[in-house]
Length: 85
Ligand code: SF4
Image (cartoon, rainbow, N blue to C red; front, side, top):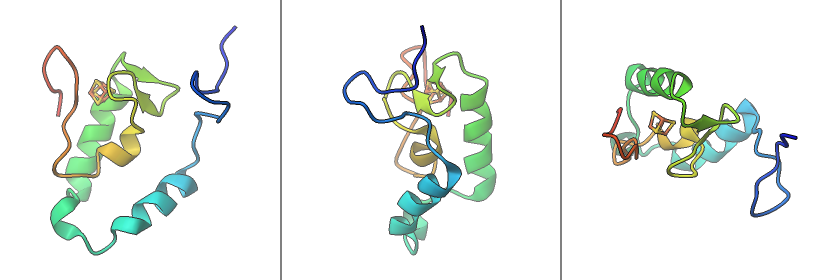
């Protein structure tokens, strides 16, 4: 049976857009750290089509929320088969 809870804790792994937006407000003003909206959406589209995306939110390689990780210029896709972005 599939659950939506993290294996390491009991937190629900399904995260709402408002929660992502709240986390990202900490980086408002860090324009050099944040990719353009076009790049961000290209990255997310790649993740959404990737078989390594779990729960529609989390990369199975990094364990990161892709909607968060994809925002940053210094982050890359961690796929062992070659970075997809
Ligand atoms: S970061 Fe890379 S490996 Fe992870 S879900 Fe996105 S495209 Fe797939």
